[in-house]
Image (tube, rainbow, N blue to C red):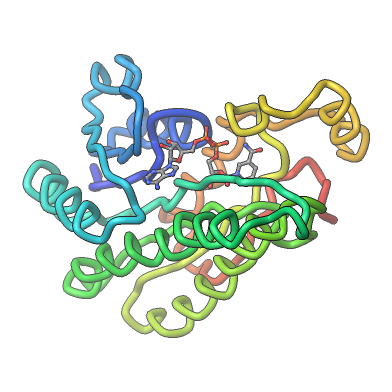
Length: 237
Ligand code: NAD
């Protein structure tokens, strides 16, 4: 059955792989992105691309209206959009901290709250949040990012309790290090250091994160809610 799926930050990296995975399953997929044109392959695959900054409630509202008009109410939400602004604590400005929280955590709140309007009406829904192994382990120089990603776990587990009786599931995928623009900024030395700590000895490919997300949104995961699934090559165990 073709479902209306929304992937935030779906124009590149992990979000793009997630959008591809749902489109390959025959779902009606919409992606939001903040900047940069989405790749042609997405539009050719029939994916609806909507520009939307998730730090702006009005833009979120407009994006949902457009998606609902074209695809119907969102049945599966993947809250993937996120940013980093790495800095050691004493050099981290208040803006470095609050802007990361505002995108990764409050931005997720905005899109989840809006999606739940229709999910409550439909008495079903699937929400998957993209956290990070860093939210579970911590990471020097990433206190803002780690706090936002750990926050997503409490957020999802609270909503899993609050809305389980309404047949809406909330699960979290916690990727390790994935080969995307976000990790391209690391030096070769940093990359080697990371890989040496990963039991599987390599970075993840975005499609490997997408596979876990697609599972959590599938009927096979009908009795899973409030779960945090690490997809990290064993890094966080
Ligand atoms: P990326 O930088 O390639 O993509 C980030 C996406 O988020 C982009 O599509 C961008 O448009 C969108 N975005 C950022 N700010 C936004 C805003 N204000 N409004 C709307 N969209 C916004 O990153 P990625 O590596 O593909 O990461 C995707 C998610 O996975 C992020 O939440 C990230 O924290 C998480 N993650 C990534 C890794 C990794 O190693 N790459 C590891 C763990 C978790």
